[in-house]
Amino acid sequence: MSTTASASPSPSTASRAWTIFRQPHFSPYKCYLRRDLGLGVLLNPKVGSTAFRKVLVEGLTNAGARPQLGPWWPVSRTRRYTTAPLPDYFHAFNHQDAYDFRCFVRNPYARVLSAWNDKLVKGFNSPDYPRSMRKLVPQLRRFAAERDLPGAADDAPFPFPSFLSYIESQAEGTRNQHWDTQRSVLLADHVRYRHTFHMETEFVSGMADTLALVGIPADWTAQKLARPTNASGKIKEPVYTDELAERVYQLYAVDFERFGYDRDSWQGM
Image (cartoon, one colour):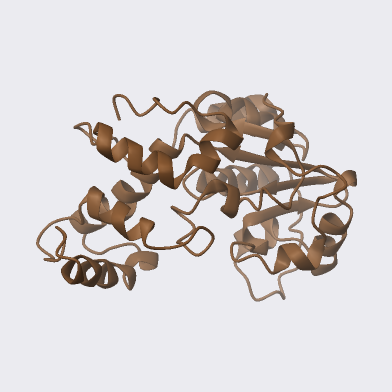
């Protein structure tokens, strides 16, 4: 289990609720709160967030737990389980010292590569792109055409170097949640995390430990995660070069430093 005190603001500087609600990446649907347990988990896209929701909801259902929101709420069953009543968000972020806030992080080299492969490469080779990408892909094509970059034509997946150029053109905090900095997505300058789990070495143990707090047996969680159902798929050939790795490092330097990832860890990706 990884406890990363340096990855979060101190108790005296942790932000209060309204400041957090105004952050571009805040969403109640990406924050699992249990006021009764003093527990908060902020989900990080491309870092097991889908697996967390699936395992959590199935485990709670098996345990006979009721959703946090009643059936009259106009949201899906999954969100009724994973979304808390509105007052709970105010309570949690106004009283952070009373909560065990947790998150999962991933090597920035792997995370941005997975986002590109999952959303743009697999999307190109599928019958259709993911819904979240259908408006973005034409923007990417126009971006490449306007700058004379590879990727303007729609007869091949959008190239990774051009994808990095697109990310570089936007400020941190304004990018798509799947490839913005994890510092921004996890609101790490505003939320005081007690536990930060590294996906590469602590995902299963971190999930099992966290879900055990809500009554889901750790052994059951570990068994479920041994059979992943939402893998992005491995990339057959290495993508990174020295030049591309340096560009990614410059884009995500804050994440490398804050979450303790090595600058040279791109080798073999």
